[in-house]
Length: 99
Image (cartoon, rainbow, N blue to C red; front, side, top):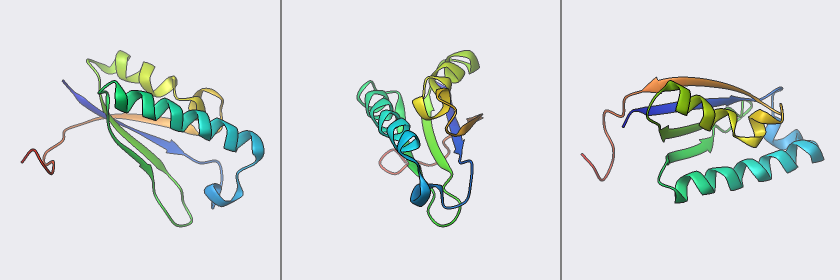
């Protein structure tokens, strides 16, 4: 199964420290969404970068680009317009526990 990564680009520096109540609510839904993907065996890993730029990443599996785009666009943080998403296909070359 192909692997994909999507980036969640925040709207401003220090986003994690300056989220509004509406943005925090969207990110609570975002976290629930990622937990469901993990439970369903779709998500490989997810998390934010730390520091001034809080870009989020989600690595997951999907059959093709259309399916991958549906996964990314169903993320509440993206679908509610809190952050912008960027999708890329990727190859997992090394994975702890597998290699």
